[in-house]
Image (spheres, rainbow, N blue to C red):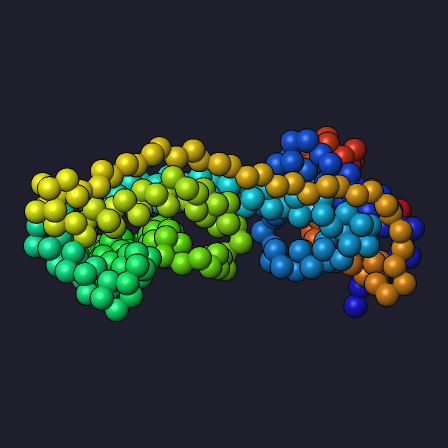
Length: 293
């Protein structure tokens, strides 16, 4: 069993780990270089987490490690907004291409609903959106192979995107016929939904539902509704962590043990780290003895 030294002997390592969180560029920091080592990353991540919690640097640690992930989230928000806007525009602009038989059917459906719920246009639109949006457009986006739009089943990433686009389209339609705000389980999707739950998208969906439920006979008599669609602005939300610097000791954490685990990993792969230029960046002399005193 390896001997764990007193904390004072790990101070150089401790200080280098803290400094690495503020190193620029981040990809050349000690933490980033250690991720490239041929070791079990979980065995390294656990002690590092405890060390940075001990030093009140955990927020900066997350910022460094999760920077690429957070950037991808912002890109994903942008992409989902663009794809959903494309799908929404395709739907609301298609009213003039709706087959006459379907228009007559939808007009009859509105008349039947009117008999049971007089003066409730929202209920009539709910019946329409349940048929057309939920069971046709959203279903076709969700499963393009089933509707003969694609020959093969989409891969996992594409399928996830289609699920989100389908969900957004359904929620826009639901908001037209419901006074209740939509429930959003994926909080990162909230900025995207905010983009679509505005007056312009709401009006475009209402106009579409009213247009397809107006028979050609009524349209020729002047009872039709013009469908208007508007270009949308893609919003990008950003988020950042604020670094904190305050080295203190914790009576409930064996920080010496955690530092020793990290030290052992570095010592076993010191040649690899030095080949990456760690010795030049952190004042190492290419010897494990300089990591601790």
